[in-house]
Every structure is written in structure tokens, then in C-alpha cells.
Amino acid sequence: MARVAIVTGGTRGIGHAISVALKNAGYRVAANYAGNDEAAQKFQAETGIPVYKWDVGDFEGCEKGLAEVTAALGPIDVVVNNAGITRDAMLHKMTKEQWDQVIRTDLDCCFNMSRPVIDSMRARKFGRIVNISSINGRKGQMGQSNYSAAKAGMHGFTKALAYEGARKGITVNTVAPGYINTEMVAAVPKEVLDTQIIPQIPVARLGEAEEIARAVVFLASDDAGFITGACLDVNGGHYIAL
Image (cartoon, rainbow, N blue to C red; front, side, top):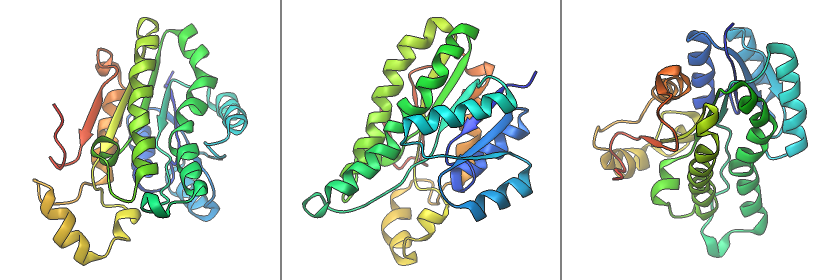
């Protein structure tokens, strides 16, 4: 039987590409989304992938949503924590609300989405958890102390849970995208992209969402069973970590 995967933020941008790539690789995929009903319904109509609406920052909402996915598709084998938001501001101008919103969605989601499925994964001796971080969680970024902290926190979560799950057949890894050609990056003024961002990328272009998706599909596969606690930087050489 095909394995079951849930992708948070799975109807748009990088999440859309991940959901489709997993389906094409033979997984039974469910795509979570938070609020854009029109985009979610269009995604479902175009891809045939069922969509489920809940807030990944809400633990009880995650429990309920994951139970619905399990009832419809079967026990969850793969969790892709892709959903994320930004509330950018320099720290001296950042509000507590801006800090809390980003930490709640971008970091708390790791616990909220993993805790309800971890017992089942341990019992079945198989699981794949892939956390989508960011280049800015690796190197930091001005105006993003909240986002950089949340995405860096993902790495600590990944490494700790990787130790816990290893003997139970559960791998936990992070993918850290660089600047990807999505709606979020498209909102950046072209002049800024052309003069400040792309010149810093050694391969001299933005990444594509499908390139992130291929990395996720690999880490979710049986072929990646000896990889856990790792971070795969997919950023065109923009940030190179030893």
C-alpha cells in the first residue's frame, strides 16, 4: 500500500510543488492549508490531492486535522513541515505580536505536527519527518530576528528528534531553501532582486520550487534511510556551511 504523506502549507508555493512531487512519486498525499480557501480548492481540483484546513500553530487543531487525514488515507508515514509566515521588522521596531505569530507558526508547528503521529510511527517502525527551514535560519537576516530564530530552532528540533527516532526507523531531516522563485520572492522589487540578491547567488539565478520538492521526495524515500539529523542546503551556493 502506498505510504501516506501530509504537507503543511501544501497548496501554494514550495508546498504545492512538494505535494505534487510526492503524489507523482506514489504517495497518498494530503495538503494542509491555513486560510486561502480559493487557492486550496483550485489546488485540489487541479491535482486531485485532498486539502485539509487547520492552523499548524494550534496543537489541538493539528491533533484533529491529523486524525481526519488518518481516517481518510491511513496512518501517516511522512510529515513535511513546510507552512511558514513572515512578520518582518527590525528588532527595535518589532512588536511582541509579530514575534509570537512567527514563532507560533514557524517553530511550534514542528511539535504540533510531530507529536500526534510519533507514537504511530514508532509502533510501525517507520517514519519520515522533513522540516522546511530557510537560508535565513542558517545565516540570519536583518529584519527577521523572529523568522531566523524560528527557522534556526527547526534545526535543533531536527537533531534531537533524529536521535530519538533512529532506532525506531524514523528519520528527521531539514531542508533549508535559499531564494526560490515563489510569490513571496516575487513580491521583492525587481531592482532589489537583480542588484542585491541574485548577485550573491553563485549559480546566478533563483531556485525553483520543484528543486526543493525533489530534495524532500528523496529524504522521504527508503533510499534516505541512513540520513537523519541532517540539513540539506538548497540555495545555489548562497550560503555554504561546513
